[in-house]
Image 1: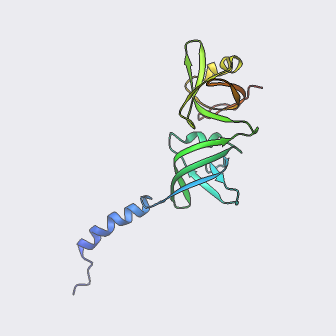
Image 2: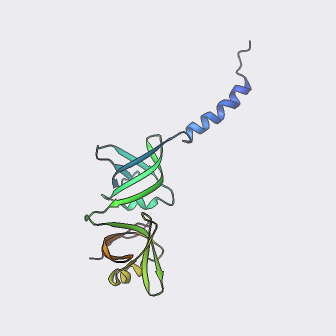
Image 3: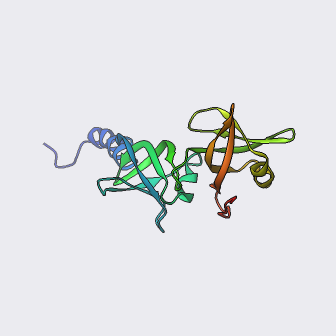
Length: 169
């Protein structure tokens, strides 16, 4: 018997080690709670007091702009963090329904592609004037339904990276 390890064993061990290090074996997880920004990145704090650090992708980077909003995050758990694969904002800061999506202009009207429902919603005239400067950006709207696929916006917040947080009223 040789005291040297078999090259065959080393070749088999390498893919197993790499998949463990890269998080390929992470467990699927669904977490709900309050989104919080931190210097280390966005987190979700559950009702039980557990805090999950979020690893965002370009699709979920908007989570970093939320603070105190109720969210549901799905992803893969690895190394004490959750790599986000899907997310929704289910509650706003003012107790109103929430819509999140990219602002789009269609003719003289402005609306939002809501990521929670997959539907397009028009916004009221006052909100359209304000959101006209934010076409192409991701925003969070709080308000109420004011007609078929029309939202009366009471509060809003930009979620795109580097956006300035502001509100309508």
